Length: 314
Length: 243
Image (cartoon, rainbow over all chains, first blue to last red; front, side, top):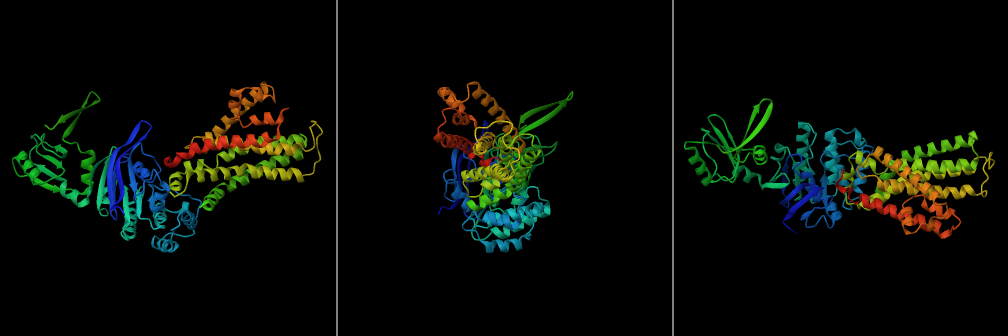
């Protein structure tokens, strides 16, 4: 069996002329909890729908558990559990009915497991789906995605629309239920603090491309922020610069692939002692996605008009 | 698996079917009771006009709610073939016009005939029983054509609107057939045949004309239904990621 649960190579997808995915490359190791990060509209759901065989890519390929979804989508769907963002289910069905209905699609459906999960997730058996709260609805969707012992679970922004407590509660269930049996979890979200405590590895998707893929520890180690107590310096030759902001008397540099050589380069640039900060995943994501790459944009207001002016470094 | 798909579709459509049955048969009974037309005219009116209304109502039932309730993705992320889902949806929706029409046929048979064939002379006493299968076939074609022409992301109201447009197009087309002299459609030439074969009413002209052939009565509807179902499958083949 392959060591990768998901392999994506140069994946392209367009809705008409609108190119959503522009050559996505990504590998998800078997047994990992993989965070798939991206802003709204970055292409996360499109990537996931391609993995499920619900969309056919315009170029490139992907393999899920060794199967090409474009060739055999039913085989892929029978082996994975999927929970869509803000999952809508049939409100007229009772909880037990929807469980029975979904179970009929999977030969490996485990009623014992479901009975246990119903108690664990505190779901009413007789209630109609439309009467469930948002949190209960998410928990039911999670339960439905697990009943057939999937080897890979894909969660597409599963906590969308939940309040902070319900979100935490949901994540607790996810961690408790899925960190077992070597199940691979592919967890898509735009809420970084959600992914941080759970994920082993993350990939950041921006404008249809993976801008970074690494383990969370590696990412925290390699992306650093430096506070320099002066603002008039030239950072043109600094490689891996993700973000640069200047105040009147100080500047903040966020760089990737930070090593001793790069530190030395920054100290030399500053010409005086600098302060180094580690970043959390939220800040790292922000640096990759909205970091200015050293190109500062100054905005002027004049006679009621807004003017943007890009300045390379200083 | 098929049983589960049928169960779900039936549960979603059953009230619509019940509503259609009550509505159609209430109108039928009211017309028979009111004696504003003879029994034969009533049957033609109820089965054809009612069949058209039921066809629109039924076409609004099976596919559109998945779009408006955003449940397509949930449904199709299960290991199930889209063609099975489409076919079952089509079939259960079709029951929404067949069941009310069959109930109306039973009512028509058992209801006391107190006003038969007085106003309009008809060909023979069994005319209603020829009209009934024709009404079923015409409304089936109309229903299937509406399902296949409605955009796959359409809501219920939009499907209804498409149904009305299809009905208008059909009426214009039947006027065309009339203009070309009823019963002589087979003299239209190849282009006429191709154009006509997309109208759910076209084959009536053939079977009701002087050149009626029995095999046409069976072959043409099957051929036309195959065309419309193929159109429908093509339309829904790619609805996988649409909602």
